[in-house]
Image (cartoon, rainbow, N blue to C red; front, side):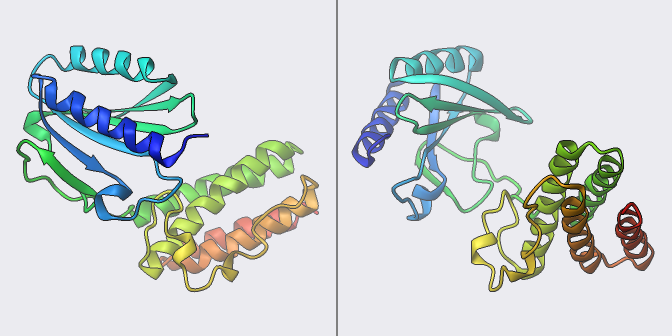
Length: 241
């Protein structure tokens, strides 16, 4: 398990490495530390502005992180930006974002420029309500059919995904962060989600949870025809008993 001092030292080393890399023309701290909300469990989020040879920079920085104790990594791409996420041997997560210098800049409030120049960029928007609704009913359809087929573990998977999207919709309504569950603990009342966790894979228990979730989803839908259709999903599941 990493210590706070180990994390701080590694971050300092990374900042120094960026400052001495001639291909890196800008750097920023991102995430919780950028807005003074870092705690014992926070990871390292670091953004680099690269003006040339970005593949070479990625390769060299990857070697650097492994020399510092990384054991694995994964890549997430957003347009021309590569987010390489490292798992350190100490279980610390280190996210390095490699930005072309022409696109480097803040997309939200959690961005503290250390050096270099930034571009004016569109700010991150909230999740799209219609997309969340669509993903919720899509997983609901597959939950219903999985229950009917007796594929209880697939049904549980679909129910859990459906719940995630319904929770995000509720966060949007309440004006808290609706991304990756970050605002759930800031909700004034989480009792609305009571009964949305399946206590077993017994078909009757899966149907019970599914009915609760479809009721919550129906309440989040503004389109009366779609809401009625979602209600029929629940009624269809109940008829399987």
